[in-house]
Each structure stands twice: as structure tokens, then as C-alpha cells.
Image (tube, rainbow, N blue to C red; front, side, top):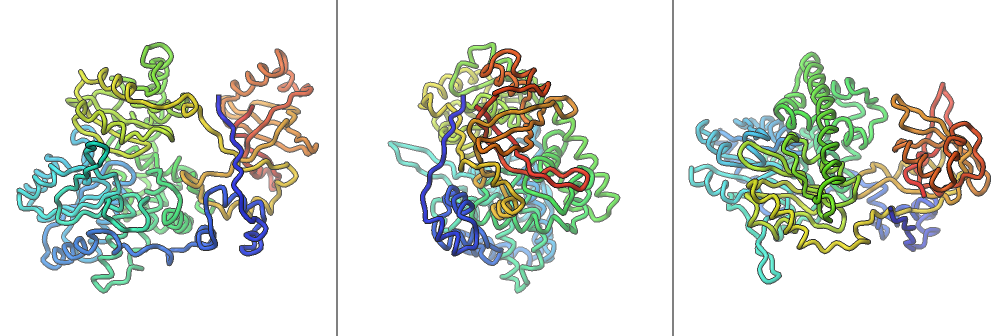
Length: 586
């Protein structure tokens, strides 16, 4: 059962409305996102790339710039080492393109998810050493690779770490002792000694900031690499960063550029997945473009996605885009099978009774464990670890809920793990098979989640009469975009809405189109893209047997439910009508 909570955050909405030329209702929505004060509101509504912070404020940025400037001048061999996910691929792309633009002798390596595992490791370092590499630049990894960095240094290589993940630490007597890799430069806004004003950047954004500073140091205009901001925005959404502060500006800029992209690979990917550039949103990045780019690293090689971003001809771009879409379609089928098995374990085994779910799926592809964990977390609203067999160890991915800091909890179990990393809401790990049950026990013995914290909370922005849903209101809501983590779509509610009729829609008839009427007797179309059977079962449970079938037959009588929703527009044969998209019901 979900908890509905109506937000009641106060402010002088009339004054905000007058000052920023918005409605009091929109002022309330902005306040609900904890945007407080004239400057913060102005930045939120009107922020541009001119408002981004100077990357030189990051600790070690000056050292990284000096090192790379010297290495480019010396024509030293530089290798970029990234990660196999969307953030890592985009970061590698940014560094390669920008460094080549400065005349660097640069190449790249991306670990194979199965053979190499996550991040910098000895195999990658040995490959670099054998290839005569002088300088390694990491991106979206490296902060947890203290031993590996020391190994590279022992071979005489220069190492520049750029990352955005949490710095590993050991906690003794309540005090955290951080362990930074002893690289020649470590650029990570999450360093405890880094004074950069915004910590929430993705790995690609950190890489972009480094390249901006490098270009300025070289006397080049940073405008020369502005096109790479598309990849920053894609990585920010794809890596599920909070769309606040700088990230909001970066994603807005990226979406504007993507609507008329000059990158052959991205154009081909949008074309083959049916995305209209003119109406592209963060949703399309998160649920269409991102999964296709990630599919390379999950089922094949991330280098295929990198090749797409760097494609020079339309023919090459079309071929690579088609390959990635096919891989993603295959990934979806394999994910469904993994989720079905995970659900079975939750429903039928002792592990399913735990507050922290630790589910061992030996047949699940290692690369899909994180997606499956996310799906189980959504279904049961509990922290979830999906464990599966790797080459020589058990590998795992975790997805968490708001009140369970996953990285911290893994740190408390570190003696059971070979390696781990991540942050509050997601983590990855590797371990010996015999430690699966001990890990499950320890995580649950340490768990302090209350029953209330295990109840998913639906935060409602405001109650909204249907009469307020107009074209003008929809245009105003667009000022709040892009939506995503940290800047979610507003949630509106209406009590005691009368359901007048319903019909099943969609290829599998698993969605609903309804006609509804609110307490002020204003009628409107509604759609529900969730589980139609679950919705109809809730109608029957509340209003008795026959009520759901009567609703489907257009013979509804007195069926009322409270709904949460987001207003939308239905366009059909040139006609635009207002409708609501139902997101939850009671």
C-alpha cells in the first residue's frame, strides 16, 4: 500500500508570481522542488550555460590541465580508459574528440563487462604498458582504484583520474577515513577536499569540464567543443543524475542541440527508434536512446556504442544504430526472463521475506542484474541485490530506496566482498559464492528500515480541478522541464473522481482509456498506462463484483476513486484535446 502525502510548502506565491511572470500555481510547484529565493528561482527558470561554474574550481583540475598540456606538447601516448555504461562511453567520446582536436596522440580502452569487470584493473594497465602508453586518463572510474593506480605508477605511467563516484573510506569509531588513489591528478567533485559548488555531475560532465579548461589553457575557444555537450546531457540522464543545478542546464542545452543534431550516429539512432527531434525530451534519452547505447556494453561491447557516436558517414551510422537497437530488443527479452525468476524467488523462498532482498540468479546475464534489480525494487519497494555468476566470482548489482544508503551499507559488509562501489541508490559488487548467505544475513541484521520507510510515498504537489487543465497551463508546465530524477514531473490529485466508462487499449489490451468526471462535474478523457487488470481489480474490490465489467460496458454507476495524474494533450486527426494520464489510484 502506498502512502499519499500532500505537500504543503509555504511561500508568498503571489509575490513570486508577479516577480517572475508566472501563475501562483506554478510558483507553488517550484517551491515544492525546494527552489527557494529569487536567485535560485531565476536560475531554475532562466539558467543558461553562462551560469555554469568554472571547472578550475575542482581540486586537482589545474594539475590535470598542466599534465595533459605537457603530454600533448611532448606527443606522449595517452590512453583514455572509460567504463562500459552510457556515462563511461560518453565520457570516452568527449575526451577522445577534444584531445584529438588539440593534436594529442590518444587512443582508448573500455573494459569488457565480463572479462575485465568494472573500472581500472591490471589487465587494462598491462595492455596499456605493452602498447607503450605514457599516460592513462580515466573517466567515470578510477576513484576506487587505489591499488591499480599504484600498479600503473610502478610501471612508470602517469595517471590522471577523472570520476564522479564516491571516494572509498574506512569508518572507525564513527569517523570516515577516505582513501584517494595516489594518481598524478584526481579530479572528482565528490572528493571531501574539493570546493566545487556542485557535486552532482556525471562522469561525462567531469570529463567535459576538464576539456573546457584544457582548451582555455591552450588558448583555444571552448566553443570549439560545445557540440560535445549533447553527450554530456545524454550521460546525465542515462546515468540517472539529479536534474538540478548544473545538470538541469546541461540537459536543457543538450536537448536543444539534439533537436537538430549534427552527429550522424545520434541522428541515425533517433531515426531508427522513431524519435522526432523536434519534440525530444529527457524521457526519450532515459528510455529509448540510453538503453540502446547501454545495450552495447551489456550484450556485446561498449566500443560499438562509441563507434556510433564517432561515426562519420550516414551509412556507418545507420548500420551501427540498427545493431544497437536490435541488441536492446534482445536485452528486453532477457530482462523479462530474469525479472520473472526474481519474482519467483521473492514469492516462494525465505529470501523474499527479508527487508533487504538478496536474490541469487545464476542464469541471469551479469550485465542485466542492475536492470532486474531496479524492476524488483519498483515492484516491492525494498532495497534489492541481484547476484549472478561471473567468470570466476559472483557479481551483483543493487538498487535502493530513498531511506537505505546502499554504498554505506555495503561498506559495513566489506569483509565479505572482493570489491564494491557505487552510491546511495545503486551499487555493484563482486564476491565469493560461499559468502552469498552471509552477506544476506549481515545486510538484514544491520538493516534499520522501519515499516513506514518500506512503504512507498507518493508526494502530491497539489489538488487540481479538471477545469484548470488548459493549453495555457500546459505551456506553463513546460517551463519546469526537463523532468527526471531530482526534478520529477508534478503529481496532481483529484478526490472522488467518477469513472464513467473505460475500454482496454494497446497491442496487448493491458492499458485503459477512460472517461472521468471530477467533483465540479467537469468531464475529461483519461489514460492509464499501468496494469489494466490491477486497476480493474481495485475497482471491483472497492465497488463490488460486476462494477469493473459494468465500467467496461459503459454502464458505470457511482464508481468513484481518488486519482493522481499528470495533464496531457491528445492529438488526433489535427484535433488537440486535454486529457489526464493517471499515475496512481485509491
